[in-house]
Each structure stands twice: as C-alpha cells, then as structure tokens.
Length: 328
Image (cartoon, rainbow, N blue to C red; front, top):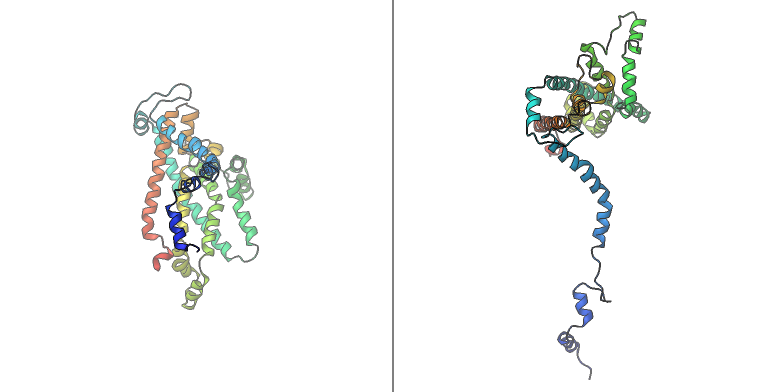
C-alpha cells in the first residue's frame, strides 16, 4: 500500500536539514561558496568614480579650501597664516578700489542683463513668425553666443571700437565726428554692455522654445474676441512666458556679475578704472598682487551677493510668474 501525500509531507518536515538546505537558506551556493552579491555595487561605484573624483577633487575641495584661504594672508608663495576676519574688514573699510569695482559691476549688470533679455525676446518673437528656413536663421543668430566669450571676439571688439576702428571709419564716411570709444570713461563701459548684448543667442533659443509651447488656440480665441497682436502679447504671450523669463533672468544675472573676459581683453579695466569689473579686480588681487587670501574673501562675498539676488528673484516670482498648473 502506497503512503498518502500528506504522510510524505509530514516525513519531509520531520527530517533534519541537509547541508544543501542550510546553504540555500543562508544564501550560499550549492557548491559551498558564498554568492558574491556585492558585484553589482562595485561595478556601479566604478562607473561613477570619475564623477566622484572630479567632484571631490576639482569642485568640493577647492570651494572649501578657498573658504579657508579667505581667513588667511596667503600670498601664493608661502604658508597661509590665519588672520580671522581681517580680509573682510579691510575689504569693506579700507579699500576704495573694491567699492569702485563693486559700483562698476552693479552698473554693468543692471544695464547689460535687461538689455540682453529684451533684445533676445524681440528676436525670438520675430523668429517665431518665420515659417521657412527658421533653422538657418536660428543658427546664424546663435553664432555670437558660441564665439562671443572668446578672446578672439574680444580682440575684434577692441579693434572695432578703437580710434582707427570700423565704427569711427563709418562715422567719418557719413560725415559725423569720430570718438575715442574705449578711451573715454563715459563710453568705454557701454562698449562692454553692447558686447554682452551681442551674445544673446542662448537666451533667444530658450525664449523661442517657450513661445513654441504656447498653444495657438489661445491666439485664435482672442482673435475672435477682437484682440490685436499687441493685446495678445500682453494677455497671452507675456503671462505664459513668465517661467521662461524667470529662468533666463536668473542665468543672466549670474553671468552679468561673473563677467571677466570683456573688461580684461577689451579695456583692461580702464580708462580710469571705469570698466574695472569685480572679477577683474579679484583676478588682479590674486595673480598680480599675490593676495590670494583677499581674493578668496572677495569671491565669497560675490557668492553671497549672487545668492541674495537669486533668492530675491525667486521670492518675487510668486507675484509675477504664471504656471499653467496654477490655473487648474
């Protein structure tokens, strides 16, 4: 007589566990060797190791080390000595050139950033109406941004506005008086602002992408109600474009405060320090006067200024930025 199935199960449960069963419960292999469950983690760490090494060695360590140097008198040659807040006190109370650079930078950023944003928006609105060959126009208008920050373009800009440059040549041909654009303290900063506005390509592309995402049905419905292009711009385009304006504003404010190449190459801070931007003065303190501790303190003050402006822009965005999800 064959045993019943329930009887066999009871017999198996009463049998002592074999070596194979113990290894299986413990996660081991049938051959007795432990399974290498950490292989996947090791492979993952190897793949992200270039980023981790780069972040720790080239980003995090320099940031923390510059913070330490800002409290020292490091001169790039000797050993840094801890001097506490002396660099910061000297910066705010005993350095007229620091305040000169700060004033020039605020004027430059305050004019150049709105100028670039408005110009980029106007060009994007014009491109949004173009149907044919829009890719070619977009590429041509983006080219100044690709090469705009280079040394070569800054040298070209210096030649363009020099005493014997193309601008004065054109004015002379038309019968107008020439001018020393880069030698006059009242006009030198405006040549740098014009160069900053000329590099509008990246902002223009972001504006254009935002314009393409606005549904055409909104314009069709407003046309039925009798709204013209100007009214459509203020009641449809501008409100729906505010998230893009917010992003572009923050990015351009950061770039405006961090501008260096134009003032270094085109005017070298002159004449009479009228184009001495903050970063150029910081570069001089670090590598011409070998005052790296002071330059590090300047860098951290600029970081705080940019953070404050960014926070204020974000805080104000609650009142003027319209998100489509808010209306749902």
